[in-house]
Length: 392
Ligand SMILES: *Cc1c(COP(=O)(O)O)cnc(C)c1O
Image 1: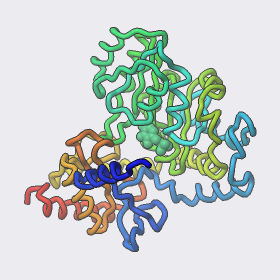
Image 2: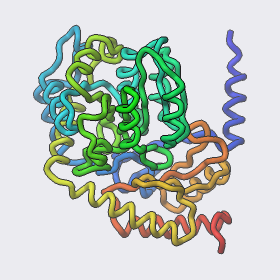
Image 3: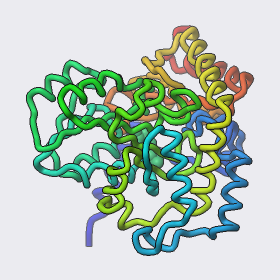
Image 4: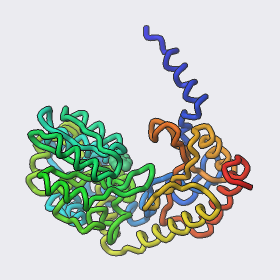
């Protein structure tokens, strides 16, 4: 029999290094305040940027979808057929993104597995920002293409690598917003390089949609690049508050992927309640940008105050606020102390971020009130002083 002790020893090592993630159990929905172990804590962890995870309108739409369509899709769409709400939602997403078409899959992670491997293989070259999300990295690996990492956000480095690496078909792929630092890809520059050298461009807008651009339409709209990005990946599990992912682009791309993409061919479609809620979220965002504005207002307030208190909050350009602590053990202690003070803010270390770059990543949401943000600021200052992160 396998000696499982090897693995339990490794887990012990992780604990000693402050790198073991203690997964909290929530006794309440995702929202501004949570109940964890019977304790009320302020939520600074979730990607629920607009509060959609527990929004009445989305909940109602999900329940109506269950009433009308049931709870499950039956099988994969190529075999059991597709529900018309899948198609209506794909059309709504394509309109939202300013593309011709879109294809829904089960998650943002799967969207990258769906988009990259069918289009690229051994003879091809993929240029990937060195800090791209794990799901992009895995999608690239799965394709078998040669992967060339370019220095984070560095267009000169990217151009040099494009000039010196040829292939049958080439792709530049980047996160839109980088989830751990909150910085934004120079998409205009990337698109220019794509045009200059005839290289396909793909962006994963997981942390951009619902956040960037007019009405939260995402990074492509923010840079006014509609129609110029070949592949636009999205997730329904961040600002959209549900779960699911999609690929958006021209009709040929989507038609091709529906014939070839393994997460589409071999894994069942998102469920009716998911799709119903997603459809409602797109409608809410199209009607009003109040929540997007509130999100940015809250972010500015929190970040400005954290800076003036004396925290190092990196160089985020979005509501993602990394509170840089560098040492994994300090970050882990900081998170524990915050929890005692009524704040849920998880520490993040290797392998999610590089070694020596541990942090607490604060996620600001439109559901936060100024009063709650003041509470958070007061507690961060208190713990920062107690742990010697801030000068007294
Ligand atoms: C979060 C994230 C994903 C994964 O999305 P899920 O819908 O949770 O699977 C994919 N890509 C990027 C860039 C992300 O930040």
